[in-house]
Length: 88
Image (cartoon, rainbow, N blue to C red; front, top):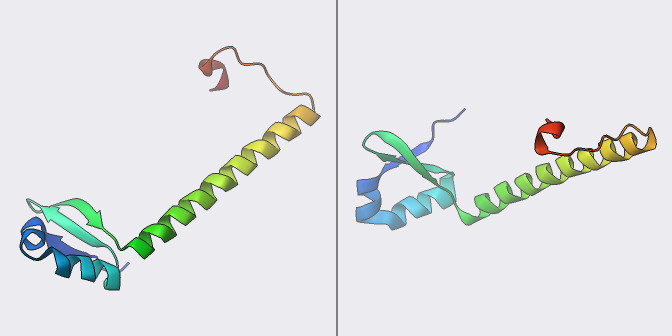
């Protein structure tokens, strides 16, 4: 794994544009506050990619649940849940 780009909150306060440009060009920038990671700044294109991956993963899980439901319905092994605890 590559070392992340790092900026301090002070650097952002004095020159936020440079940090934003770095995030767009070189990838995520970890912002440190009191020597601890606080937030991560990413470029919009990178955010879109992450959202798309998240949506694809969610769709995959949804389709998996639908297939499991259809299989259970087909084999008549569906169980009626009366509470959330019944599902766990």
